[in-house]
Image (cartoon, rainbow, N blue to C red):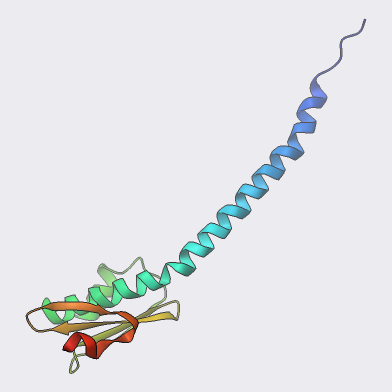
Length: 120
């Protein structure tokens, strides 16, 4: 009775492994894309608050804050209004967030753009 070769079992397993790898890779890419897309709201608020605290409390230049503390946040756009004591920030052009400086209280994020509510 001749022995059967087991070499064919490895060849049959290769397409299954490739399919599993492809599914895991696609799921990973979907998660990473969602994470960066959804995380822009948090990153925008964090950036606005960090810049407001740095500029109005510590007296630092916004460029210094962006190049040091916020250097890992990609596509950050911000504006500082020193007269109004506000900072607005966007990451990847989404989720405009504002932070307001209040004397004696520090800086706070203005949720839903309610800047005047923080001034009361």
